[in-house]
Image 1 (cartoon, rainbow, N blue to C red):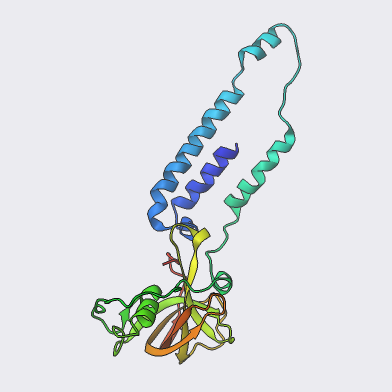
Image 2: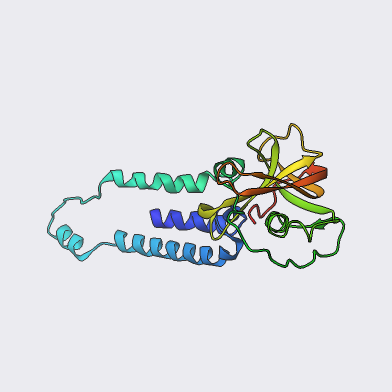
Length: 234
């Protein structure tokens, strides 16, 4: 029963968008395959367990009459599976970002970044902006209007910052990319609110108190609240 329910929970999450809260999008086929295997294993195990065995038939023929049951406490193992089916925890957000240092850690050699694509403003990922701002000193960002998307988190000085979680594989290794905001900073916006920010590169930086990594800033021109995107991780 546990394998059957667990496989059903994974399948339910995988055929929608729920799985994106836990793993990268490319892992969806593997999740569906593992869910189907668990369901098949659960069905086969139930069939094998519920069919009468030769020993049971022999006891019945000889009037044994003794019932053999597994300990009932074993059914409590279904509770965490039901929790997975009925309760969907949210994607990593402002709390996780506040507990972890920005992923833009370590000293990297200066790199040649390709020019940004055409567009005004040009949409750019948080990681790309932070990397260009810190390791390329903003050379490829100068004189361009930029569009970044992320959620609001509180910085160490109490001012709002823009953040987004990046994954190597799954939510267990998720780490934030943080960008400080200056200029037209969003005011009175609760943490975990998703916003689109239009702005320009600024040389202002700060140190993340969690791991002392450099946090770049963005000079905000305009911003607006948006619904949480389907893919919340970069």
